[in-house]
Image 1 (cartoon, one colour):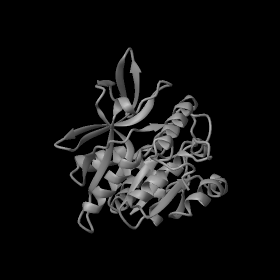
Image 2 (tube, one colour):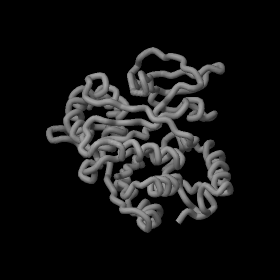
Image 3 (cartoon, helix red, strand yellow):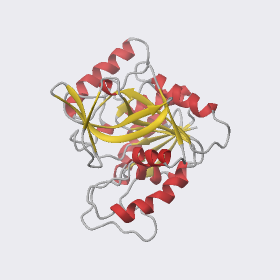
Length: 298
């Protein structure tokens, strides 16, 4: 099975390319820990989805390390990677979103896989849970997806709003997924949907998606079909994004897929903002000292 890492974002809120930010004394990035955890869970290859402009720097840093333990491919998420008949609108700078990032890796995905964000730490149990879900499916399964969900209160930062997919479940499966900007306001957790719908409040234990999805390979065909349709409606909207939570929500509502919500004992942390880094460094150090990871990883 394959690990697909979405690492093409520029990190505007972080103030730089956060995927290339060293997070421990050995000079490892969060990406190193992600690959390490996925490898020991059973995943056999990884696809890094990055910007072509960062390829040499990326390959010569994290690439040369992880190539020692796992098969590596690189896919490039570029604005002009569009279906036939479409052109990049003048002035467009923002990437096309997470669903487009997976679309960019289409030529490298020929088996069931999981996706993760390049700037999030999910923990070893998360990968184990995702791997076991895919391994339990009958060979050739179609539309049998999953998401490893976290409690919203464990995925927030004191330094500003975060983007999460608010997951509403029914009998252990996704009923509705609302991609939202989430922050604390006067002690309450307020979610503002990215589609412009009214804001709403949720409790501390509300499950949210951190973009760790487990997919059958058929999702690639669904993206090939859906992306042109989305572009016809949104290509001229300057900040519009083709988002994987939105795609999954539509597939579930249309009865074309099911998405099981999986739980994990792992604790998430990440670097949305520059101010988040000290906490991440401290958390990783504590895990190394506790014996969860060996010093230096590789």
